[in-house]
Length: 405
Image (tube, rainbow, N blue to C red; front, side, top):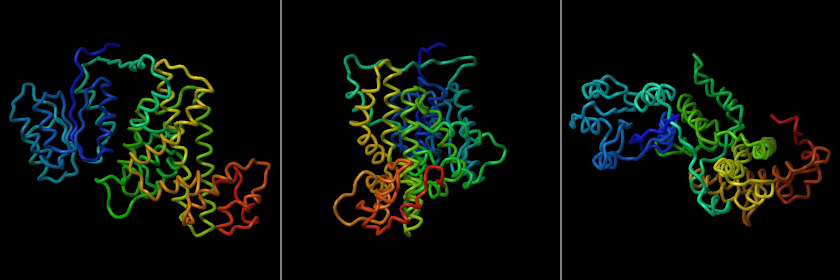
């Protein structure tokens, strides 16, 4: 595999950060060495074009400021030979919009939500020569940098948790002749913390925000729709480190996933019987170890780059960095405050007035730590159980590991 002498410059004009992130990931998948500039308004796009001519532009028709169509018109005025590749992505598929774009000869006119596989194929055609294959090795670690220093920096740019193996296996849905319905997507995605968190974040972004905030996977899927949800899932699966392939880290990841789902299931069961929001409680329980999983992904990146790793280093890293990783991700992705507060309740109850859902999450976390041969009844003395006025009979009826929904 060869490294190109000149990495192509790609300008992306897209106001919605999650759609922009997806397009960036597709560009990297097509051409890993691409110099990508992602911008959220047309004036910035035009300024970047004037600073240095790109090899490809991917722009939304409805970009704030100078719109995608006007940017295409400006690019075509330059009369470059050959014409600069320009992908116009749009929700405007009416005859008048198409008719206005056709004389400007866009390289592609793609309706939102676009087909990610089709866009990836087009990107490869533009960014690669026939038979060309580009290799992009990971950059080396900074000399003398400690693991703690590496993780401090990685926390602010971490891509999040790896995906469950069954999510990777289930993405053949994208190639299915008949698209799955939203109920089928929820069944396939419901127990993956990373996918749940990012779909909720995408559904709450400015471009998709209509009405109240989304706080569950079902709400996010309904707002985003099948195609866009599948596209986002595919983009996540394409990311480097989307799967934990290091055996040591993978074993810890399985424990994190298992406990996340256990807390989520117990919270759902309790909430269903206490007139609380069961689906929101399930979501908060599922996301409570997002930081641990994201940290494992960064540790794998460290190890892949040549950094030393052993049981003690991993244990210390989890104790020191998992909570900050999780907090940083939930804030950076702008997950709803109410959902973040429920996640925090898994770990501790602050002083003040507690919502029923917060008490449920706190108690579910305690119940998740009860050994299979021990009784749940002892939890009746726990603060959350007392405040919820739960007796030992109801607690003892909580589902064991084999009884989850």
